[in-house]
Image (cartoon, rainbow, N blue to C red; front, top):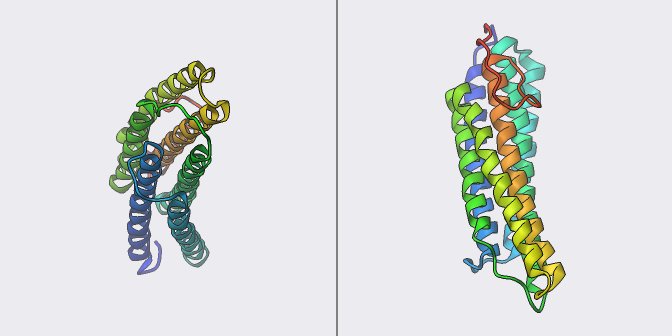
Length: 227
């Protein structure tokens, strides 16, 4: 059994991860609002906010490593700490994708002619942020069934990305080709955010069941392992 105070520190880590998730989700929303022209912010504002997320990612990682070294947890406690480490890294990467979206907006603003932003971008963003939210809820409540459902939402994001690609191809004849490519890259970054949310859901399944479902379609059923 871990020493007294371990689970209190673990609970604090989970709370910090939740707060970080909220900041990351907000950052994605801000970046997409830049892309659709519904914001007074600049790409620099997005990058500055990402610096704070980077710092928190390092701090959470250091605390996880300290708990692993000092308490040497076993079974479910070990899986939970490993899951926190992995989710922490995925959240930081999601923040990076928000920065990439903002950078694409900056490049778009330098072009003389760019196509209208397809409505698919907003729907992609909405679904990706919902996936992130639901994956973290599944983590907090240790709900493997809800975590598995997150991956199923990714199919719609993939389909929307394909739609953006096709629409931009039709615009390349009348608009700056580079601008159309930037829109495609923005969509690609949103799609990667959804992929990372799926990863988080898969990590939750591992935490709860002790079963790895990555690379298996995300629908593997198994009995929970003992703690």
